[in-house]
Image 1: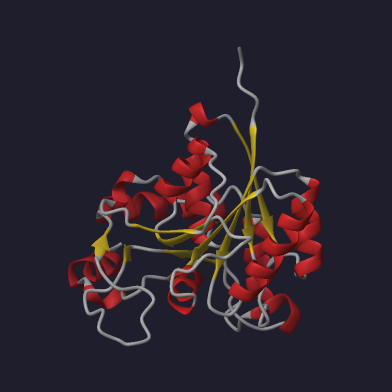
Image 2 (image 1 turned 30 degrees about the horizontal axis):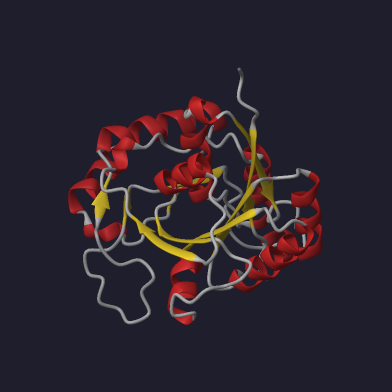
Length: 259
């Protein structure tokens, strides 16, 4: 008997300084969500209806985002957050639980570490999971288990071998529109996209750090494969490195310069 598909929604939350509103600033897809989406899509055994709501690209407020989520009737909703929009993620999660207490709510991104510290890992009634670190593997487990927790579970997950992940394919976002907006909101008017070559920081001593150890790097050949993909599919002319600390890995810097 064929399994019923699970409805899973990933949300790219809006923020105050959105370049769409201001008409100026750098504008790139969320690589965290894109990586989770790409790697979940290859897990055929999960049988997913996987949807991304891009509140940033379409400049959606909290109410609009919540309404779009509810229309999809999801079992699991994951929010990618930063320190500046973590409150919005919590607010939307609370409203979702009012409408449907059975929805499993998940918060990740850099804002998750701030939340775990500020809340001292205490229970948040309307939040099931707070993921600190990499979300690809743990999100797969959450979907597989479909366990609605009684209390908030704070979990830290690190993918040590970044090359074990497929690189983000930029298929869950309207990537071409991001490129066009960037051409309008930046001085260079170039076609640019973002990429990461490493995660973490080998220094990791700053008191405000939400990154920390361990420091992990991708194989230069894997990076080149992604660069070739971006060049062929999107014709990019400028690359934005979004590593936590790009200058930690001299060999890779030399390699990128060569490429």
